[in-house]
Length: 319
Ligand SMILES: O=C(O)CCC(=O)C1=CC=C[C@@H](O)[C@@H]1C(=O)O
Ligand SMILES: [Mg+2]
Image (cartoon, rainbow, N blue to C red):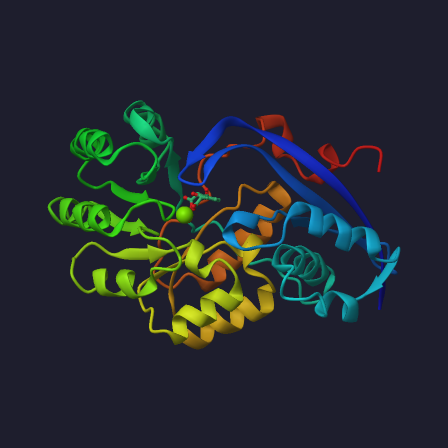
């Protein structure tokens, strides 16, 4: 089966910069792809790389799109190499929407986690999210010095309602001693702390495995397991804690589905700050593959102003 292929880069400025241990991220660069089949059915996909997590760069994704012919086949799509996981996700998602059995999975039962800004801004953000129905929040740590962050944490955790859950995401920014201090501190506030995400750098797996057996606070790996290859690698290396899965950069959705179903992993699905196109495809995987009903990290939308939350037509100007 042949598909007419076209693509369009889109850049979206965050409504507020995303500050993490990786640095300050202000603009999300993506590529929206469009497939049209012989019945003129249109399907969309989104390439939203995060190269500092291990996916391809936006330039590599653009080069890949430029070298494709105007007509492509499902063979070409299924042969996209593993070093282009965001492309694999986008093209395979678009292709599966054209398939006859493309019934969409119900995503109504998902619960969402609200992302709080790093630093003390978080103290003033959670209330309005709580009023909107969020029960789970994620706060970035490993950005400021640890004494300052622990001070803010103590205020935050005591102000949050008892039924709220707080996730901490260090983006690999803590050293071993700091990670132990955070885990020890969180143990004192259980059960309100759902997990600490990527406390140590990706190359400190032995230490994170050891820490995961010392504290009651759970640890989630994110950067360590960002692509399917990394996911399989650390599963083989013995990780049985929480896996943060970002479908947008993990790679082939069908291979991700197979892995999650085969290994029954405790997964938290997380955004790559994609547009509604990639978000829809990722949320369907989350609804299908979440086994512990953990809130999905697709809460408040940094990206699109309300009027752009419509489907791609609003993004797809003069192709
Ligand atoms: O997972 C969530 O709650 C929201 C998404 C999120 O936190 C992230 C998305 C993309 C890159 C990262 O800065 C960050 C993360 O580390 O999880
Ligand atoms: Mg993370």
